[in-house]
Image (cartoon, rainbow, N blue to C red; front, side, top):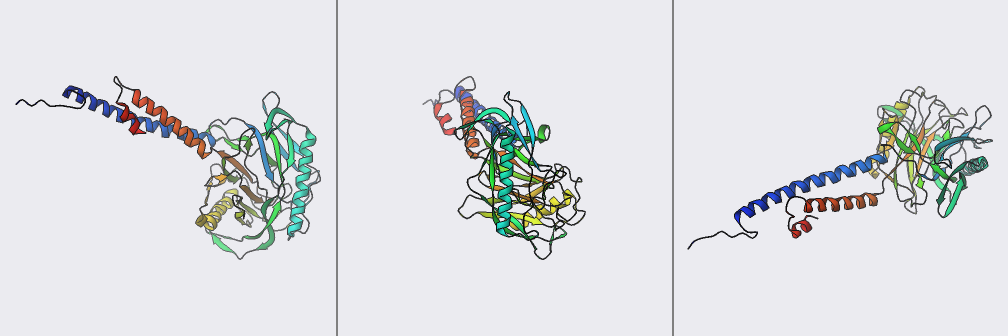
Length: 394
């Protein structure tokens, strides 16, 4: 009896063709998946760099407390970034007069710190609103703003302040440092509507940062504890995460004096307050800089101190000497508040916040891309592969 081979898809020639097409499909699928990951990487990267687009919204600031008073010779001001009515990016420096140093220094009580913070916030709000800066209309939480407008936050934000006391010296990264004794206080906050993110850096180094910041830094009144919440785009939910960084103008541009504006020991520190639970947790590293320490040495010690203290809790920090930025390695929920401290008269440091994509958005984009890849793989070639094969791929 003659034996005639039988194949599910027909003749031996047809089977060879189907095998070739199956191999081609597998290769196309692999290339498609590689395209997905490359595309996702390209999507994530712009959150940290790559030609950021200015977006209007609101920026929330938690006010620290001053260690010295502002004067006409040493004025205090805030710089506000916004889009003018024509949609052009602008900024304006707004002087804030009569900022008075905290009572009770060098060891203020909790009530004194909170009073100084509230008074400073009220002055800033009044100065911004008096400036009547016209901006491109933007609707935030149902209200349309035609001018840059500051409003007080309904709730104060728990923060940390230096009590003037220090812990015994400890060796960190080869450096003998003294950590200040910090205590909790309710720092007053305010929100500025109609602002945009500040763009710093050029090209691939560009970042979106805090829309409102103090000038010329914390040296004006020796601020201790000036936390900043993430930027919230207008008309959109604030379900984003953010990266917090802290740094200066270059690793060799600062030299610590070891003193604040009142002649008391200075404090440099950074971290964040986790507000995702009913009992806020504080993740803060701070120490007293020694005379002559540069930006690089101060921020390197802070990175090691933060990682040593909070690594077991899942939070670490690293310092990049090229950008002179100290950063928390993990993304933080937008409800968390960053905390920075710099009362040293020789160091020029400020914190910044870089918005990162919402994880759910990345998943959605990834799903859409996978769908496109599936359609491309299943529809490619001379002959369409069997439908069950396509369904099994995804």
